[in-house]
Length: 213
Image (cartoon, rainbow, N blue to C red; front, side):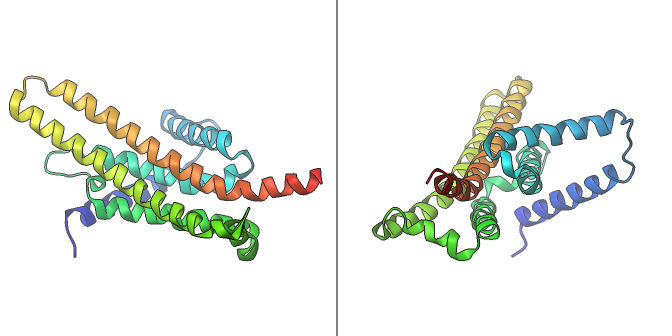
């Protein structure tokens, strides 16, 4: 079913793709203001990933960076009259959470191989396998519900405030929306980074253990 969420999501994806294509056409060693700003955004994303997964910055930057950029735009587009943020729809946040879930295992399997990656679910004891599986499911559900609940409540609170106060105080409401939208995008992307890095760091911990032995 094609609804407002689907249309808005695809519009955002198309706009991001077009913008990325335009910005990457004429890169220069002496960047102008726009290229400097874009490079600053990329450097900021890389620095955050560097803190969490220093050995996997290059491989994680495309996924985490794209996720952050999409979330920022998706959360903020609710400020446009007549447009609702896709992240206030549980189906959209569920899709994002599933992408994070699949990416976590894809990166882990790609680095370690499927057999070695899946073996960590049996450690330290095979008895813990059901608990590991439950943990995977619950954190994916929590990731989807957290973003949906926060964005839905934010838009409802802004609507109720405007209904009561009218347009006497639009600027504080807009600023609150912007700040909260950025915070929620950061939290979702940071949790995604931590989940993916957790699977990747298992190999590093295993390698350190073998070296110490």
